[in-house]
Length: 175
View 1 (spheres, rainbow, N blue to C red):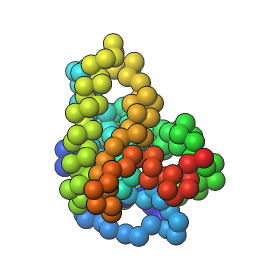
View 2: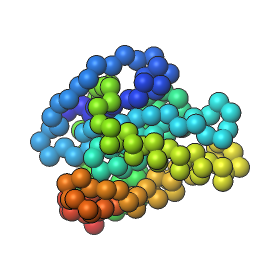
View 3: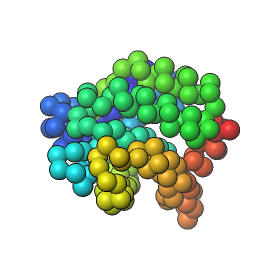
View 4: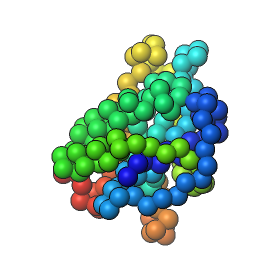
């Protein structure tokens, strides 16, 4: 089943894409089905990042570039590397990457909670970019890995917080 990329309006415009509102079911046992995407400015003139955020776990994949189509090949590569770096089960990685590479559908955004989290994360990533000497030196791996410990409110558990990695540990896919 193709993944859904819910892109914010600015990224849709920059990518030259139009989108409807797609809400589909993932393939059976497909976990990495729904992604939100937005542009993040860096401190380097004309240089942007595209941030992909998994709904609902908030796994973050960062790519250097300005458009969805221009960054999708890097997204697939970086997603697989992120999962390996964070000790996800090899069988899970293989299955999810194969399913993700079946294709994608571009959609409008429809989850305000994810958008709010993305806005907070964006500000932190913009600040992180100040610490690098150049656009090329931005350590995307380190930034992505730091958000595996991102603390967020879990609406399914009133008055409880969880880390991104906790979501996956509860599903039994992190070693």
